[in-house]
Length: 97
Image (cartoon, rainbow, N blue to C red; front, side, top):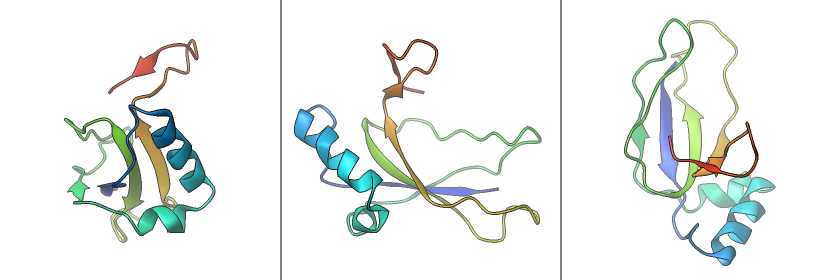
């Protein structure tokens, strides 16, 4: 699979207001689609289903699977992700990668 990663513009995650805006887009992904920046395309996933997109700045991103790249697998619905994101191991620290 290949993914397109779009920054959602106007969301400053260094502020509480930016996090509140990101939260509002969680329930209204179509609103986030109205504010997409320049796309970055991932490399195809490896045999484990992993791919990496490097050097993304702090922000909110919409992730979209490129149609026809899933080799017959069920496609992934668009989703939002933040950089940083909460570390699921401790729910206390940030992950930037």
